[in-house]
Image 1 (spheres, one colour):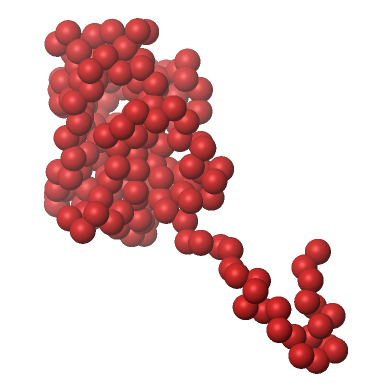
Image 2 (cartoon, helix red, strand yellow):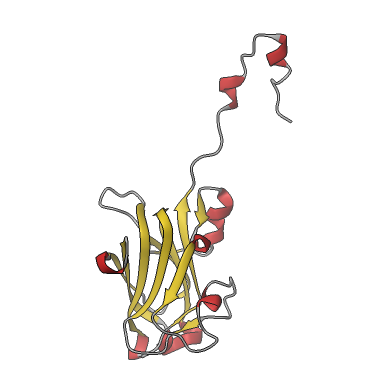
Amino acid sequence: MTSEKDPLASERSGTVREVGNHAIWSLSSCKPGFGIDQLRDDCMDTYWQSDGQLPHLVNIQFQRKTMVSHIYIYTDYKLDESYTPSRISIRAGTHFNDLQEIEVIELIEPSGWEMIPIKDIHDRPIRTYMIQIAVLSNHQNGRDTHMRQIKIHSPCEPTSFDINKFRNFSTVQFQQYATIR
């Protein structure tokens, strides 16, 4: 796990894309008006607030097997104090009954984006139908939790190609396509 200021920077570079909008999201619990819509609205002033006993769960289910390379979680200890997660488990599988824990993260008074690399035993991004983010404990032994944003990143296939492979046009018909406007 590493601190990363802007998950959008890698999206803008074209190396990853945010795939959370391709998933069905569910929560173990939430206070009215503090649910999935607030967790996914790209606003750092809103948040999901759980309402119940630990562990608090965020379930992310994809309709097809999806490659996931990173999960970004935005939390703010200065604003949320005892509501801030201190220990998070990341689990993956095909459905609720076969989830395997792939990462456990300790957060110490986090403020901002936390990047969690999601890798298999060969250090490659995982392919999965489901991800579960479980808040195992909060700072100051808090009961409920706040998470302000979650982003799920998938690596992009390189879309650029080497134009030099196509430079040796030999006929007049091909030479008219030798430059791209």
